[in-house]
Image 1 (cartoon, rainbow, N blue to C red):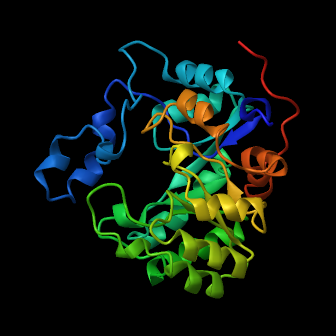
Image 2 (cartoon, one colour; image 1 turned 45 degrees about the vertical axis):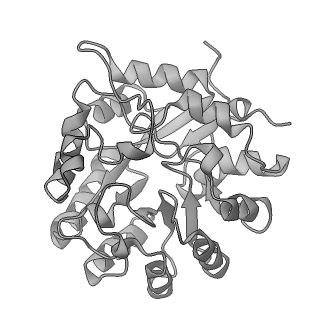
Length: 296
């Protein structure tokens, strides 16, 4: 039996706990209409328990995150450039963190320029985007995304895109998985990674991954005990190279909980290393890590 903590994982969605995490979601609250969302610290908190997104004033969020990574054998983490903590982590620990850039394609030229600048200045390894969180929303196959997709091809960057029903109480049609069919047709060179579950269209996500070589899936925002059956079955068979590990620390899940639960996921033994590390190295063009970090 494989111990997930011993594989040496690359986590494709890590953030940093904050003393003021509530403010991170102000951009979303302006779009939501229900009273409940206005009072939530985290707009999808109704889906999670014991959210670990907090540090005390004066506590080093980078050190806290690194300690959680080391406890669970996480070699590297992909973090968004949007926070001061992420920039600090990339500067202090370039061997442990890689950067990504979140974009909103409503400003097409601004997004393209930001991607090029971030690649030049910070050597980002991915572009990320949340179609339902854009203001206004932008469907995955909308023309506003097309210059973004071509820029990713030109810079040899994958794009990570939310797929499926949005957690925050926003409309979700813009993230219907069927949109990816058109994008994969129009941009056959593009590497696209679906994030945040693709539910309730996970069977369609599998069908499209079988069809399109450049389409992938990562497990962000799902506790392992809730990984969709269709995704686990696909990883165990024809999709071993297509399913990538991503957590959701500290936004909704602790790394300790994720890795405690991972051992119960019925992946076949040959799936664990691609799922936890080598698929990420291939899709995100990461230099392979030499060895896991030492145990604390």
